[in-house]
Length: 442
Image 1 (tube, rainbow, N blue to C red):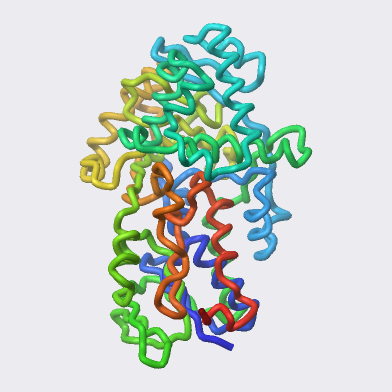
Image 2 (image 1 turned 135 degrees about the vertical axis):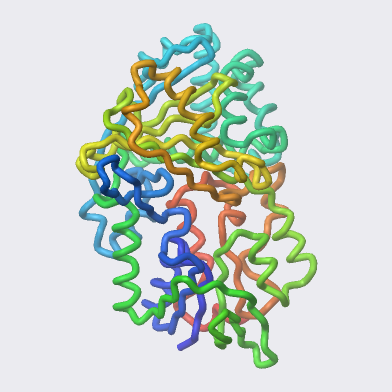
């Protein structure tokens, strides 16, 4: 039996801790925040009547084809509670029209593109769904690949606004693996034989999932330390690792750090300089995400894509077009995400400033929305959410194993062919061989 430490109590850290505990190891899990969850953590929204509602800080869905997520939920006895919903999709363009693009017929009516443009757009998606080699895709710039299949006009009118929305100016450095990974996930269910892709959620959201994780981990003997920040991880002469916190030092046989790469480089003091350089070189996109609690629904689209360059946010995610409004005391919850570089000044703007920017545009999209409809407006800020998939990223990305025996670094920076979602992140759990102490040998 080995003693393991997991640094970071998000879904990845909790899943890894559970796997190690089930394999017979002693595990201590450190999380700097007061509660588990990381990007999947929840918070309280004021409901406008003096009460509060608990729901996710950021939007999350489980696809029917998300096998790893479903297994994770099964491991904590929650998969059977998943509720499955078929959702609708909206599209808002520079002409100010909000239309549905929820099926093939509606897609053919997509404004702003000719019939030929739409045909090439559809071909692009089909071609992307049939490609299996992600390494080939990361050797081609995303704009160049899209121009090849979609044509210049469709790229300018459709793809570049969407790329800018998610990657900002960094899209010019991104490889086509970014689009490929997105298409692959959306087509996964169809390849597995499902006729429709369904979205699922657990009642209570990720607050319920993380509470259940805490219960299961405690029952399996995992020592969970919320509100404890790790200052450093140092190698000892006998091959063990010392984890330093404000509460003191503790020794472990192995440590898995699941923080963003620059943070891992900072606390893992014994890594070689070239390893630290790789960790620090990762280019991250962050998110400024407003949770807007409304008295009433907007348009019934779970996701509305926006290609208007004047938009101050990336998309409209109407969570309660997917989640039962009873989960939010009969109110409607809308997320307004804005993906920006980790050093973007928007992170320093207060909630009132962001509200003054976001809500007028939202009312432009939905003219019947009034100030009285807005019950609360709260902003979550995370500077490092996902790594920009630059050209040949898999050749330069950090490794999950390190030169230090028994030390691992795992996170979104280790996912060259994925979109940021729980299911892809859970693939990193398999990087650790939990079944034997051979995981500690080189």
